[in-house]
Every structure is written in C-alpha cells, then in structure tokens.
Length: 276
Image 1 (cartoon, rainbow, N blue to C red):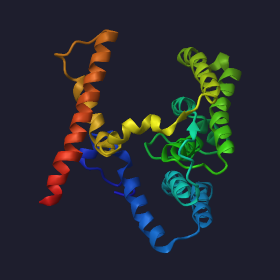
Image 2: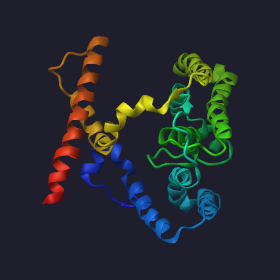
Image 3: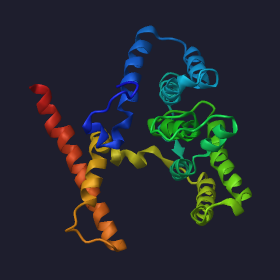
C-alpha cells in the first residue's frame, strides 16, 4: 500500500520490490503533472517543504521519505523538459561515472551529513533524506545515458566527487575509531575515488552502450525476478561451492537464468497475457 500498512507475501519474499509503492505514487503523480503542467520550481518547493517536515512534525517522516524519492523523479522530469539534446558525437567519462555510482552507494556520505543536521537516519528500506547524496551522480549519468546535456553539468559533477570525498575525509580523521573492516576498505575506496578522478579524462561515445539496448526491454522483469533467483541459486546444494571459481560459476549461472527468465516474462508471456 502507499504507506506500507500491509505487505503481500509475494512482496515480503522479494525485498527488491520494496519500491513498488513509490513507483505507483509517482506514476499517479505524473498523470497530474501531465494534465496540469505545473512549474518545476513549484514542484521543487513542495518537495523541499515535505523533506523538512519532520523538523516541525515528527509524524510526517513518511511524507519526507516520499519527497526524497520524489526529488529523483523530479530530476528525471527536469532532464526531460529542460535538458537540451547532446550532439550525436558527444563523449562522456563513463568509467568515472560508474565508479562514482558504486563508491557513493557504498560510502553513503549523506548519512553523516543528515545526522550532523539533527535528523535520525531510519533503518527502513524507504528512501530517506540522506539518500539525496546519490542525486548528483544519478543526474549526471542519466543525462549522459539519455543523450542530453545536463544543465549546470560541471557543478553536478563536482558535487558527485565532493560528496564521497567528504566521507573519505571524515573516516581519515577518525581513523583510530574505525572498525577493522572500515580500516581495510578505506584505502580501496580512496583508490577508487582517485581512479574516477583520473578517468574523467577518458571519454567515450554513447554508442558504446548501444549493445545493451535490448536489456532495457526486459529490465523491469530483471528487477522483479532477479533477487528470488539469487536466493534460489544460493540454496542449490548440488552445485559446487567454496572456491573463487565456483563463485564465478554460480554468478554466471544466476545472470544467465535471470536474463532468460526476464526475456520469457517480457517477450513471451506478457504479450500473450495482454491478448487474453
């Protein structure tokens, strides 16, 4: 349901589908936007008010969560309405953006920032204010993948680098207080940040990804069946395990099975179901 009041067993057994209620609300919201064509600035102000609502009304946390997710939705709408089309021969630092995506997700610098501002970062799977740390890199990568020029692109790119750098700097300053696992990962994260920075000079055309266009046609089914198949594969005791080679074997089988199941659902079953 929109506020998570109850969950069907199917959803409870597939945690990857936790965001379906967000998607439902945003799809409905898009119908209103399409019909009324409001100003983007007005939508942005509304989301800002809802984001900060828990400061005055703690019970409004769930509205703030939806507003945080709405910022990503509004960012996509902003790109569609305001971002000009990029030249066909434009090049982008794809490697840098992909590394920054992974690094920002792992470091989650927004959590420390919102705690410093007095917010409590919940442990629920909902989108929260702190996850806006992913917005700069999401906009940068989305605009590049869609073939658009990101307005203020340099500022968004700088923010995408600064946010994980803040997390790395904080961990470096608190090195004695870090757990042993955090200490072992910190040099790796720092190396990845430097690789991303150096990779901004290596730019490739968008056609580099044209071969993945077919995957986009089955991406929703991949999202829906991917996690159950991962769980299922992990329970197959007859498959060899315990070594790096067997891990790679299981990973390859999981990917192949997921793509095959998604293709069957999207390309074979769904067209026939629609005709029923």
